[in-house]
Length: 302
Image (cartoon, rainbow, N blue to C red; front, side):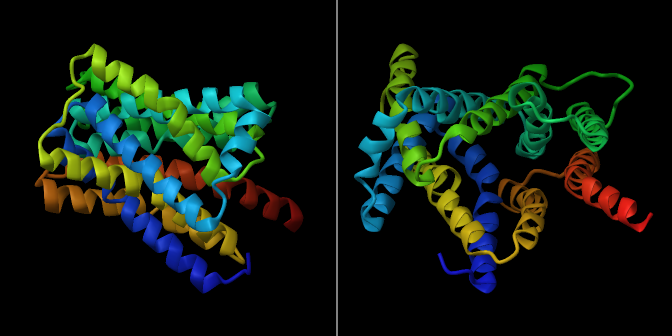
């Protein structure tokens, strides 16, 4: 793909804007359907969208080739994402205010760096430890509404599910470090693996029926702009970029844009504890990225 920084930034901005709306879409959809139903109809929408993208790219034949090359890879990735990840995430959104759930979800990158030490043999850097401490202090601030001393959570189950979702998402990325195939085809294979499991859970819970149209519209939006098309936009941005750092910095705007949509559309009053905790989490993510670079610059200066 020809490098074009302006094109990359346009795709990146589009992806970040769309991702920043999905926390609001989750809550609106969950007002009309259960978390499992949202997962089912969003996954179906995403699978259809990804199939059309591969068809337009002339890459639909890659599905069979990549599956034959490593079927166990896609079984593992499909169970982790979308099945377990979104089950936990949507259940968390069902129990928590959107502002809390979305902020807690951003800690996945911190957990990923910690899991990469035992699972990928990476070294644990001092910056990773500092970032983890800062991020999880932010989690406590958000979960307790700023009442850190009390350690009383409004919804311990909701907080636990939000953090559990970060574990599944981190494991998904670790599992996919071994995948060398086309990323869109790989993502679609994950959805195709997960769909029978999702349908089975829906049937077991007696929820295998069409919900209200408002919920369906929301599920289609979530499927296309959280799970599917936005992933392709971000992938295109990263592949087009001459420099990826500006794109990475764009991603840090996402959680704050998300709070704006949550306040304006859902009408949630954004708590000062949420802002404080989210600032700690985003600072932790910045430390994780910039810390090693600052250390390297300091060593060169010496």
